[in-house]
Image 1 (cartoon, rainbow, N blue to C red):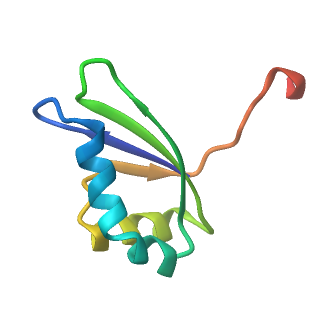
Image 2: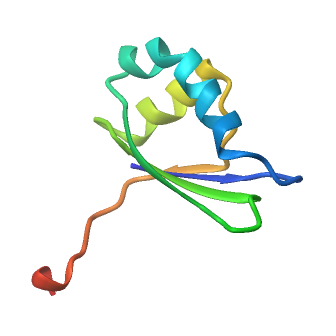
Image 3: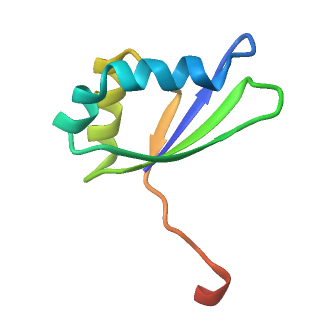
Length: 83
């Protein structure tokens, strides 16, 4: 599952990571496991990858943890060897 985040002002990745880490039980209770993030160089946009049963589990975990997000959507990995 991919999570899109936008911020009005530049943020530090560590700030967002700290919120999630403080509330890890929220993610664990929804079987949502953080995998990795991509953070824009202007620090106003972020895409986070989670392994989870469905998008609603990730939405709910982020809401309970107080981590801001704009959208959550399922995605499929496409690698050159799959093309």
